[in-house]
Length: 253
Image (cartoon, rainbow, N blue to C red; front, top):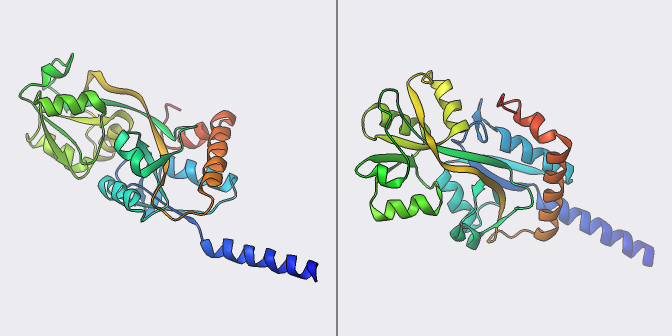
């Protein structure tokens, strides 16, 4: 009788676990080559890396892409289990649990401008009176935020990279802040690599981006899941799997 009861309990647990379904993660649809949409499906370094980490951790994951502002709102409101490729900020830490043992990628951000319109940029005072474009929802660190609040520059937000580039070429902005890898990936796709260049001084260097879990999501054994994924991501960084995946998209790896 005891054996039968044990078997029944195990079957009930298995059925409950199966009913839970896959983890539902979201990512920025406009962050190539880290996350994007290719032939109607999510793709990119972050998407492939996290999918492999989930497989190694024995987890199912479903990843969908949205504009960055939507991604942040979904994490905040618990409308997904988590997200990929977010910068860590005090505000985001209130609603997101960061898998900070191993970042999912690192970013360098610079200012891009049109060829022939380069200007000196040694510090934020050099941006006085200039209009700087950026993606809506993007966090560029406390120095950028302070300069924006002080009025050292005028900041114009855009929904995506294509709109930002169009704004630069159309004379709406003097320059825009962009991730070097992401921007050049997009410029190459648009045939504009010889029309837009970046200024030497970096806004951010080796800024880590993380996978996160939503604090508002109803996820059983979240701590155990986080630990399993962090172990898998760490293993992938050490055994070369991360570089193998990244090399599919970026030659620098």
